[in-house]
Image (cartoon, rainbow, N blue to C red; front, side, top):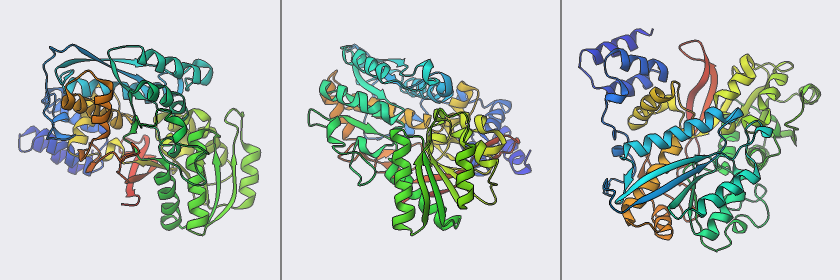
Length: 457
């Protein structure tokens, strides 16, 4: 154990610092969430002994009074994203984050008792990945429930294309903790499809929000960091042919070539169902790139792409980089040692880099999960806080009023750090991204290690 962490642990045990200070300092030292949790438990300062609303009272907008009475009846929350297969931990962690937020707020808001049901829009045939039919059925189930006021959905941007119009016609708020495809809320030349985003809002009024920055920010930030920090000049770009994967890869491609002046040797979609990519990687290796950028989600075989890449191209010769669809344990597990040295971007900061209320959240949810949470689960917690504060503000069971209050969210104190507000498109105005490297942590296990904040702020 690092001697600095040992000294910090002794200070906690002797009562010289409180648990929050302990967590902040431990994160600053680069200590893993697991080690922090163990330190809290062995010192008798277990996370569950803290004030239940420690995180809740520190985030959101402090000017909105929280009401814990429940005499007005019940309001129902639903979520919809994959919960099995490749998404078991990703989706499951987000569900637990929502439950933790609800618990922190006493499962009440605005005079109403809050209930929550997690729906699965994945199917076994897709290795747990989302299915259009399942997502449509979930959305229609929600709008038919008179108690349902808010739809936490979706994880996949392609699934959001299915349900946003359904929710829009019903006048119900839909908020996502993970959708990053720009076209859901805004038009980006060369990166979004014709008619977007208006095609998703038949009523003419926006009803969809997201607490995570979109890929027009992520793809550009990734390309700039790779060009300026890793000094790469020749790129090959792949995507999994999904809405999300192609969108973020397009922004990376355009920024790298048109803005920065780098050379793109090739840009193509790969077959996510292919048994191997040896022929593709041989072709790419022969062209001599400095970097391979892969826009994909974990269920679309990017781990195999990386495995076959590393059989022909070493980390010293060719950088591997991908977007937030890869920032999960399933990607590391799939690629194994080949993932060592890979770079992955993420909106905001991963759990290991959070401080203050964010570190408190990480410690408490890690205790619940038995592992460090998926990076996106932090945003699921924040989505819940946005919804709860909107209900506290309007104190009515009214879909339209709650939607308007959510859209009006301003100066939200975030678990990620700093504040953000929703723009007129339903996007967060937070712009900071993080670049992370997969490498052994203090316990010798491959993990995402925060390197630095990047972006346009």
